[in-house]
Length: 208
Image 1 (cartoon, rainbow, N blue to C red):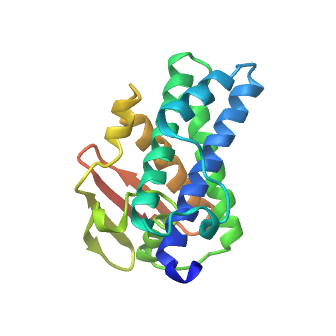
Image 2 (cartoon, rainbow, N blue to C red):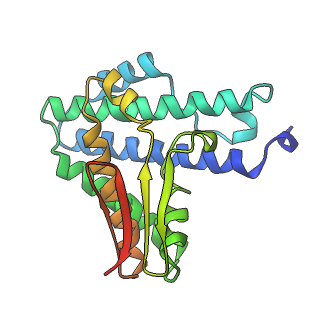
């Protein structure tokens, strides 16, 4: 049955699994602070579905591959938004602490990859091998400039806001968390690249 699955399906599923791990780490930190997160977690499952953590070919609906993966993306993004919003609202954790979780996840990911050379575009491609940006057909990012020292792109569709709005949260928190992930990823490479993002949705990785 796995013959029906292509590399792109495993690629998307791996990105979903990385975000599931981040949610688990956020919940672990909240428990370490003495917060009883069980009700919050159960509510997130009730609202947005359970995580799927098995082998892809054993879990996926082979008759609805695209739809199943889309549902998993919606579920993990929604649960992330809900958990982050609940913890911030109840002052269990600070946004800076959550940013640290994202940063450390990225640093660990890069250390496993062991990439320590490449052009800005190479790192742009790597970042979105891990960060969710919808389905490939969503075409969220449009490259504006690309050369040996910089890549700049514009986010032409905000596909994350819907999840944060539904959870009663602020999508700006999401972007702060993802900023931390991207910079953790770049810094762990040892390359002198820095990521910045403007309020207008202009993103830049440049050599510093």
